[in-house]
Length: 519
Ligand code: NAP
Image 1 (cartoon, rainbow, N blue to C red):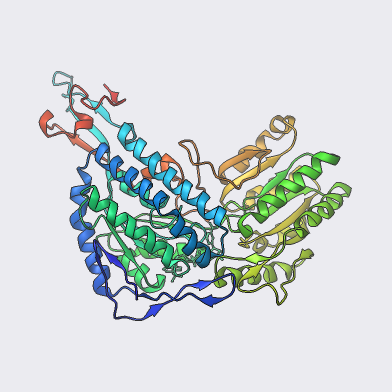
Image 2 (image 1 turned 180 degrees about the horizontal axis):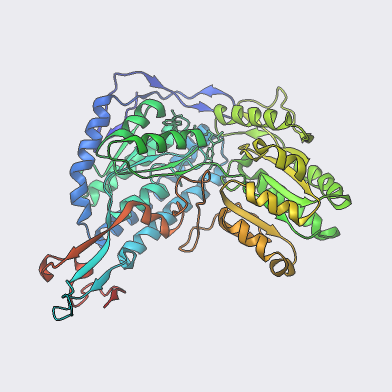
């Protein structure tokens, strides 16, 4: 029996337990994981609270040392991860290795960010005692950690958005303790990483409580964590219903806290000019590749395509369906996601004005939670009449929507919900011709792409992986890239403090050599 990590020790073994299921064959995996008890949650929070003040005074170098040690440590267990994670998720070995690389890359990216130190946005307004009519006081501000952060592991990124993924890395980089709620679908993967986190924290002399890992249900353990007074912010990737429930819970606390939930996005693609022959074929090929990537389980999966109706639209639909048919059913990450996919497809298929062009059939050889591609189509008129067509169907399906005029696209853009991405395809003249449409679309998405597909999120300083609701619960944030650290920091201003008592970032003489905004 395995149990939670409460600081550096293990939690309660006595409560009920669960097992992961291999989505490739539907069989339960042997290890049992005990649900965290209420005492476990309380102790994890108490330790996090105590660790909070100690983490807040760590230097950028001390934080960078841990983040790099952890990256090295995770790289060192990649063979173990391949063994456990492929069984728990049905993901291929190549993906496990690739996601390990991304996870370690993120940790090192944040290490470099905090070592450099400029992220704290130091601002200095020196005193002007002789200013008339009133003297100006000395004011200095910078970003400081918010305090303990609750992180929910994402089913679709068992490494890069789970125990030591982007949310945790950015919170630690900001100087915040992290309490992770494991996902029920990949507890063994979570445990392997947690063991490494604890080992590296001890090696780097980080305080106990800077990390805990809780096994258990979202509706009990997860909600208890988000409601706990010690928790000051939440990072989440998952369903709209789950993210919204946590956001509502956090907002109703006596002291509401921010929830950075990344939830649902159909990542619309707008085809603004009718491509010819080979070009259209390449577009259809690229779109099918993007829609089927990871069995459609990427948050940036292109779910809806708006294209010119008429003869071009008919041809394109035919070509696209043929490309999608090539991909055979594969296991989705867990049975719940597969059921949600099938339910979503059934719902969409039954809407007025929807034709099912292709829906792959699952036969007895497709074991476990296997699902395959689907192509549906409708007209912009029908789409505008039924907003439920806009809802995310998480998986490898595409809804093709034929439009007759640019005016219809303006109407679509007005009813469109918030998105992580919107992709525009056409020759470069459309950017000039449709400038006002682009302005409308910009309001709806965190990332706009031109002649590129939305999957394959680059991890770098300029990326934005966020967007207006329901893509996220806070359109001002990104969960990928260095900007993610800002979710777990808040500005603090020091007025009239003697130099010795100021943080080094704000001291006279600029001992850390930062780029500061000074007056
Ligand atoms: P999920 O059901 O939202 O679960 C994510 C995490 O949140 C799990 O730890 C879960 O706990 C917890 N949780 C869920 N509902 C909760 C609630 N009401 N209160 C507290 N905690 C709650 O997401 P999932 O399992 O990853 O996938 C389910 C569906 O989410 C998919 O079919 C898809 O529609 C959507 N999804 C979207 C994205 C995206 O990026 N757009 C990514 C992943 C999933 P348990 O461990 O108890 O389940």
